[in-house]
Amino acid sequence: RETFRQAIQSLPDGEARLIELAEIYDTYQDWLLDHNWADTEGQGWLAALALERQPDLGRHL
Image 1 (spheres, rainbow, N blue to C red):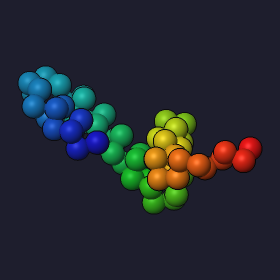
Image 2 (image 1 turned 90 degrees about the vertical axis):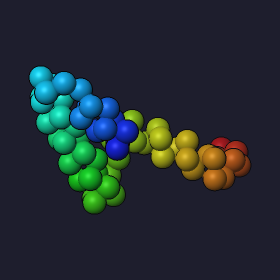
Image 3 (image 1 turned 120 degrees about the vertical axis):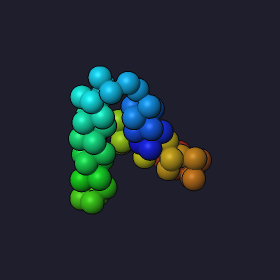
């Protein structure tokens, strides 16, 4: 998230709407984390992380 924000902030001043969009996205991601929720993209990311930590996860299925 921070890399995205930095990239947006380095754009010309005419891109204020993108800075606002980045702030909205940050707030949204913080809300998800605070409530232990994940959106569809986040679920895939969490599954990938779980498999990295436990490669045998789900092999019995």
